[in-house]
Image 1 (cartoon, rainbow, N blue to C red):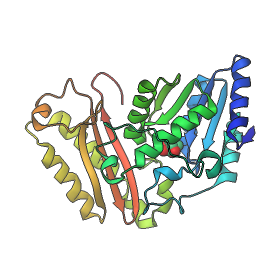
Image 2: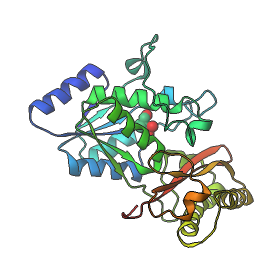
Image 3: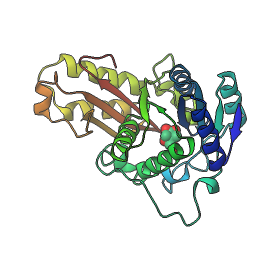
Image 4: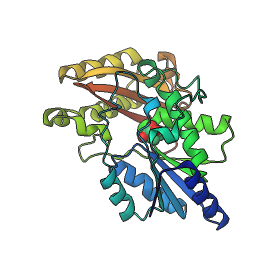
Length: 291
Ligand code: PAF
């Protein structure tokens, strides 16, 4: 396994792999790899024969008061995990390799980025799309694997690929959960013992809301949101947002649409603070598919 830190070396390695007829899959990460990332890497291994994992804690997607400086960095451990999974290349550039000090070009998606996390994390998705575009240009993949846990991010990147004609096929892999249902996340590391015990309630409530949506008549979006918020507040959490949206355009679902949801793919998406730790999760309702 090669560890590459410059863009030119990465591009050369990908060029060579392409010349040798290999299919390249990239798994973009910010490191601190867990079972969720491992499942993405395993998926990449099934779909391609040259697998690149990128490890870069991207400063441009963190807001001023967010956790960029404290974001967990476990590079040696990450390398060992990738080696064990027979990853071909880790691309791990430094900040100044990825961003010139006078960088002034952004990639920005302006519709899907408005709702959900975009409301409280201004500029976050602009940082994500910019860095993912740069990572695509550095790694030149045929396929890119992202997790469903970051549902909004996945949809925005899919839109970017379409709108900017990136020759990359995007694959969205299912959310991997702890045994008690908590979605795997590098930020779970921040939780105290007590918060960790409470956090699975997020997933439980999302499933309850899904069941109510599918089985109960005459329910309102507002009542479901209130139920979620009061249940989270009761266990000491704070809801950043809870929304029920159309899974294809992230627009809020109306009560009228709830009367017949058989033709609408629905995403129930939330961000919840457990003390200072912000956790996101979602539940996708696809009517003819398995979510
Ligand atoms: O999902 C993440 O870890 C990041 O947002 C990504 C896609 C690697 C971009 O920095």
